[in-house]
Image 1 (cartoon, one colour):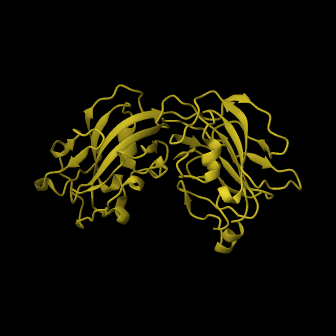
Image 2 (image 1 turned 180 degrees about the vertical axis):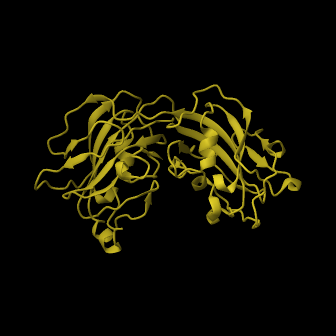
Image 3 (image 1 turned 120 degrees about the vertical axis):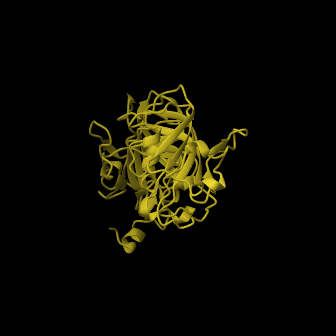
Length: 357
């Protein structure tokens, strides 16, 4: 683990990103987790306390759950008081409206709105309706298991209600921040807006990189770590620098789109890879987040909006548009990031981006 002192030392370095965007088969995270993909909890608001059940409720019937969609922009979910505490022993979805769009695959990124209710108290935990539609990465183990199993195999356009027992949601730890206890079931109403399968690697027309930018080499295949080389003695840029190495064939990424990104992040003037999707514990799968809305560093928001899906982009980010003079330690789209503020960080980001607009 990087020490606090080391993190402060890293705070001053600029960053370089190389990104490759994926395909745009469909369009649809302040990442629900960011996530994003989005973890259902990150978009939930207005915490409500649980009643501290000694064991999860297991005899709930989804026919008793009332979903009111008279105001389509602000649906509500209610459970009769005499049916509380509500719960099921396993994840139980009930289809209310069958969609006719693309079927959600194992590696897709799904855009879906939801209303979340605590099955113990019957109180609404939060809703994403009226906000940026969160995205769920079907291959990301950080998402709630019950949501992933429910969404897989469904069609875009489907509306459903689902009950998640604790083992398929937050587990024995619960989620104190949003008022979910260890034995509380969750009930969600979900509307699947779109689903998309990210590209495995950048695809498009190769471009020549400017002579003053770092040299990049990327092995073939999904989520491979890039090699970034800065010329000896090269000065770190003081402003944001972007170079498109492969121009994708897909649609342009717009602010508010969810993107799937494979990347390598390196500190300028060193060989330090401070983060890379290839090093994550999910087999190097791309990270998913909403671009252009402040979910990621400013340099990414500026550099990636307007790029085409399928592109590979090299970005050099100064501290002022990266992690600032204090650097960064902790979660960035659920991944630990550290970077120094005195010299630029090089980010070679190969991002396979899926746009849901």
